[in-house]
Image 1 (cartoon, rainbow, N blue to C red):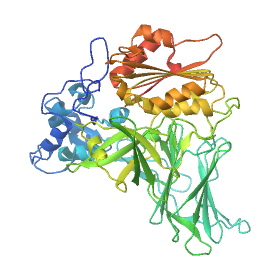
Image 2 (tube, one colour; image 1 turned 90 degrees about the vertical axis):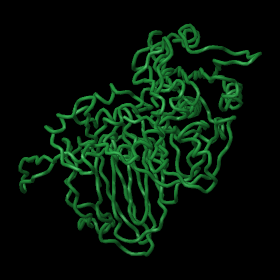
Image 3 (cartoon, one colour; image 1 turned 180 degrees about the vertical axis):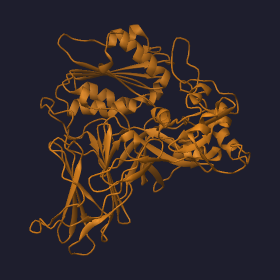
Image 4 (cartoon, rainbow, N blue to C red; image 1 turned 45 degrees about the vertical axis):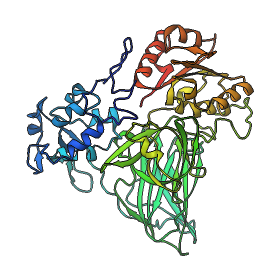
Length: 556
């Protein structure tokens, strides 16, 4: 529910401003002067009573929550915690109407649909009323015994699994298996894990039971003897979370067999010898949830370089610790987190590669499965590259711009609904981007030229204000000159004298000339930019006859 501005608030063309004439959009309001995010942070910390309870925390029943559903008395529940959002109404970038959709009821699903990444606990902690009352939920008797489980907001937490012990059935192979888990049936699509050891290493294997990118779909964090692995499998998330039995070295090696859906970790032991068990299960160990129901997890990264791209944009290279490995699939984004006046502020950024030009030429004739291309994920080795535009009057990016080499940032795992599956057998890929909406397109361009043999043509239409705002222009021009499958066109809304390219803003005739559907072709269109641009462009593309299945919009 809380949008974080990227520049002067509200930013031109952002969700926070009223859209220009002829451009429809959702959740756009013009906030009153003095009602920016920074103003809210100051107001929240003013010492006023924002709950009406004089500092008391109470347990809230559903009946009590329903009583507070008015504009002047508005409570809502997010993940079991109840907040009085009445004082926040005038500060909400999405407007009063959006907040009122969750008035007097559980707003978790609505919150997740908009911005589940926002740290609402920090932003609304002065508005905390209390916790939703827990309802006991009877569970039917199992064959062994009856179990009574408690329920919070309709979500029953998974029962903690038992300790993982060595299997007595496999001493010769040294394969140690978890006890207490029934072997999955052949039709069971739930991932499972196993583990084995040598004198010097402990090895954990995840069987995802589906095809995965062979360069990885997992994020691994090993710190202080605690191992956390999360594998992204479509819109689902599988997690292992263990406190390892014995001390280990701080590094982890990951191998992925994409065609059989296997992920294998190898961790060096500090002392040689056999372990009796792999470790003690921690919260959400061996759980399989929808990704949107999984809380974001952050790890520490170090800024190792900052390379200027144009007058206000740089590529920040972040290095993960030796105990972390993160594969960011094409089209996914991560979140950066920092503190502003004791409040946590979070912003999404889509990783790019270090350069748009491939280092090693790739044979464009060799077809590669789009679900399993070798280069579709970033690993921890080279680092994480983020192209970030700095807004002088912004809340978040000026602070990033002051970072020095060696400074630290907190970075989340990959997020986002984009999938490569629709690109299977696509022959013509069209990319429509405005400003920093170019960032998800950068890796899509590389993917289409290097790994997707079916794509015969990739075309980018890039909108900017002025010529100096175009990012990676020389690289795109070079790529277009050396690979006939790639074409790029630039459009400026404020062109200088002598600009030879297209001028103006996105409109129907411009897209009619750009988009084509050759006979026998399979097309796909990706759109990214400020929300007003994205929604108008999507509407115009659909008017050209492209179906919903042929269009993907990246939402900020």
